Image 1 (cartoon, rainbow, N blue to C red):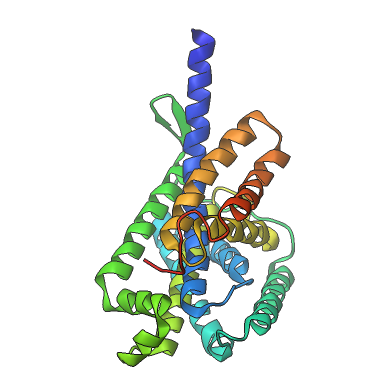
Image 2 (cartoon, one colour):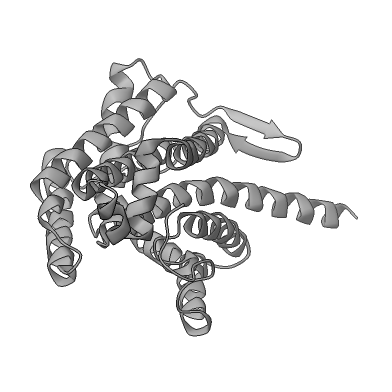
Length: 297
């Protein structure tokens, strides 16, 4: 009985850890799906926006007295500002028909941002301290850290805000309209350039929030966005290209599965599980689990 109880507690611990990381994966994947749904561009620099959010958290936290929430907000605003600049400089010049060109442009941007941060801050990682420090929190038999719990709460709040923006504002309705039927949206006077810019800024803000929430939990380093980008691609494919709910659900479920696999098997299998799931989905349902067509909202 004792062993069974310990096993149940261990499994609950793994599922909770997976839920938190799955929520953060969801923010990243939803941002990627949003950009594709509105701009029809696969953004290979998406991972570097996460990394910039983490570095922003590392830089502003000491300035703001280690306060967690103001630092996350500052990182999100900085990432959104970077998204605005990148759109005006690069993304505004890309069209739906420029698929190969968009891959080259965003891949080049990814390389520039990655090596630019390495040059500024060195390739070595850094730890981020906050007001929570390394304080532990107990929820029943589950033990976690305050920063991990805060990261999950931030992700839930971000999802709620995103839902309100997409469903309750003119800003969000325009994005959904462009994603679902671009020609009809143009006929009723929705400006595609402004909507595309707003989508990229919103996606960058989500990356900033995810990066800032990850910063106190994991080591902050220039290359940290690359594995997260690959996982986000896999999650978007599993959920269905451009389908935000599908990407979010896939992220949470796969985050928990990944955590459980990592608890009982080696890290190799933990890292591979999302890609095994992606291959299985591509073989059985190529359009993704949730999408019959491209849609946002």
